[in-house]
View 1 (cartoon, rainbow, N blue to C red):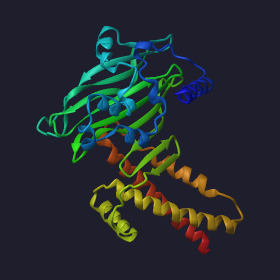
View 2 (view 1 turned 180 degrees about the horizontal axis):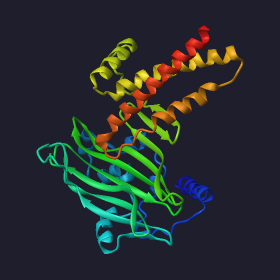
View 3 (view 1 turned 180 degrees about the vertical axis):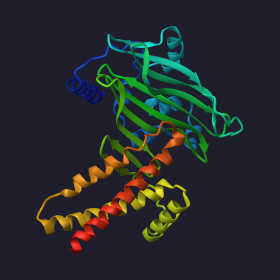
View 4 (view 1 turned 90 degrees about the horizontal axis):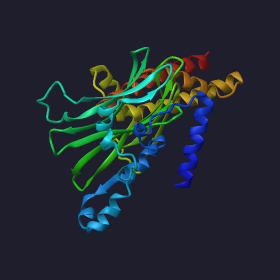
Length: 336
């Protein structure tokens, strides 16, 4: 706990030095500091629940079991937000701009789809300058599926005095076979850019069954595969052929694209290293990779859980196409 508080203090001071401004955020709207730094995969392990094991515990043991999950021990009372916003929606009131919270009910257009959320609410944070809304940010929500056998999801947040905003989207699932629990899915770090009056996405983590994808804007894309993740079940050659065919058909499969992407990353690094040796230069791969990442990370970031797989597919497909072009260019130069 002391280490976590120290880390939070360091991040706070760093943000202050970089951005040079503190925002007097109303304390009742700040949210939970826990979300400043999240180990997505560890949090998932802590918040997963083995139903068979859980059902054999007595009441006291169940409370202890549930306490493993930090999301069950948050100090900030997110349930009070609606009432607080109704009473006074202004979270920050400065000389140049305001930060205002607003609530809207979730109301999907297609009420017949049982797997769509049709209960709950979204909370939006608006940046207002000169009485005009300049930018908006999806801050928090609580959504429930009409089908009780499916899931409900929620997003929590923290607004730091440094102007940094952190959000975590999680999905709480009903038991599937013998497992249930809360699954952290999408973590984001924004900053309030007071010079340009907008919310800027600085960093993002996407937690999927096989890996956590970590993005630092504008040009870092990293993948950390989870130990024991299920293999795709195809050879590399089959994966590449299936990926090419799905691209022609207009279908998407981000997990397939992820495997193909890592193959071409390895191929590109090998070719660029050969080219570096030929030209007697050093590590041009890093700069090339950053340029490729910057191009592909211009893809708009996901907002809701339903956006994530398509987003990953678009980014990974872009990275694969860029890698293939770079590999061909390197091969042409090596052959000259």
